[in-house]
Every structure is written in C-alpha cells, then in structure tokens.
Image: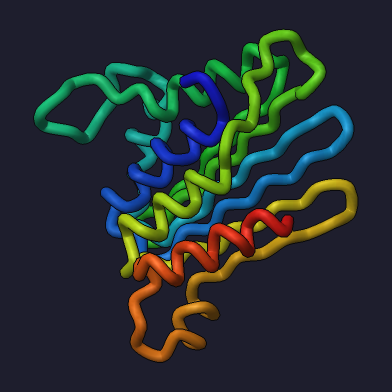
Length: 172
C-alpha cells in the first residue's frame, strides 16, 4: 500500500465484512510518531486466527486464499521500527493499533484521510463511524451517529450532506 489511508480503507473493509455497526478510526500525530487505531464492534476473531493474522496466507475468504491487509500494515509499521498490536474477542470486535516512526526513511505518508473517510461514509451509510484526528494539541471528531441524529431521516450519503462533510473535514 502506498499510504496509510489505503491501509485504513482495507482494514475498515475487514471490519465491515465482520458485520461491525460501529467503527472508530483515530489518528494521533506527534512530533516523531503517527498512531493509527481502528476499533470495531464486529464479530471478532478466534485466538487461533489472531495468532496467524499477520501471515498473508491466513484469510477467511473462500474466493482468494491470501489476505494481505493486516500483514502489509504490520510490515509497513515494522519497517519504521514501530509497534503493532491487535486484540480481538469473539462477538466483541477487534482493535488494531499501529504506531509509525514518522522520521524513519521507510515511513509511508498518511495519504488523503478526508477522501477515505468520505468514501466510507458514502458507501456504507448504515454503519456508524467515529473519526478522530489529533495533531498539535488540536482534536477533530466526526461522529456519524450525531450527524444522523441532526439529519432526521435524510440519508448521510446524500450529495449535499457529503459536500457538507467534505467542507467540515477541510476545517481540521
């Protein structure tokens, strides 16, 4: 993957496949590190699956016998000397934490998180997302549960709403 936002898209699609109804994405940028946390309330993984999840030949798919999302994220984190953690419980969900050392020559760029978040919201309007971005003591939170409450029945993936969300994301 060429940037972290592509990893986010891939991991979140795993969460959606695991029947998550709430997905939290948090990015914290500090001087020397970038921390990505993705938490979902999906079906979770067994201990056996969790032990093998970094292996590209470990997958639950029936059509393709290779699952590269988590192994590629793990490798990109390790390439920077960073830290990768994953926890999961059946029927409770999964938490992935990836800490990149930003100053390492092999650290991939963050990419366009705004477009990634907008794409997820537009394509999966029934799933709730909480996107938090923390940088330089500033915090931005986009919570689709709250937005849906304000919309009172208007779909969150209506073009006018997506355009408003795009403008809001640019303010961060």
